[in-house]
Amino acid sequence: MAYLLSIVMPAYNEQDCIEKVVENWTDFLRNRFPNDKTTLIVINDGSKDKTGELLDKIKVNNPLLTVVHQKNGGHGNAVVNGYRKSLELNSEYVFQTDSDDQFETGDFDKLWAKRNQSEFILGYREVRHDASVRLFITKVLRGTISAVYGTYILDSNIPFRLIKGSFLRKLMAQLPDPEPFAPNIFLAVMAKKAGQEVFNIPITHKDRATGTVSIVKWNLWKVCIRSFNELLRFRMDLNDKVRAIRSTT
Image (tube, rainbow, N blue to C red):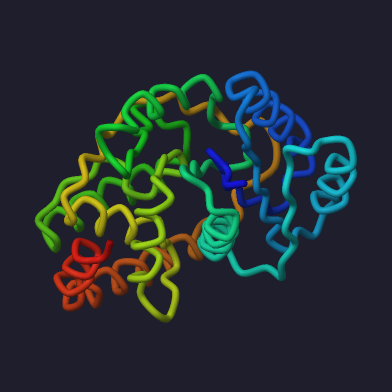
């Protein structure tokens, strides 16, 4: 039996909030889709705290939770492996969010309401509660994508997105190799260039109450430079990728 919806959630060192976040999202699935097959896929990205242990404990009494443990590969790698798992489950829809408790489950329906109008729908952190350097980088990224690709996406890397499973399969087949640091950006660009209306739906973004951001200070700038370089190189392949996405059935 195929899944109607899989929620993909990477997790790294979130022991202080992982139980709450998993409970919120699995309760949401249970109440919102009581008669449908759904799951929350949490990718434990080599956490060094008790995140993995807590997930295994929760899983015993929570049939809606799917846990995948992996060696630390970074947020992007965890997201990609979560997407792959959702496709293995033959999910009709795939929703991706984060485990840091900065989003509201209630905002899901804003994207779900548009599912028949687009195969790739993005939220947009209209008021974003992050460090000023991250806000600045987001603005630079937005301008870079607009200048390099000729397309405008308000929040291309947002971890609050709904994707039709069949379309995600096409996108994943065209993801650059080697895997980019921020794959969600590339998926968003390919989807938009392939003709999808991403909508950029305003959603709530809360202050982080627990844990710490894994990439800070100089390391943040280094990964951003890497991502910008990857985006520039990808420009040469984009048209072929988009044609392949449009031509596959």
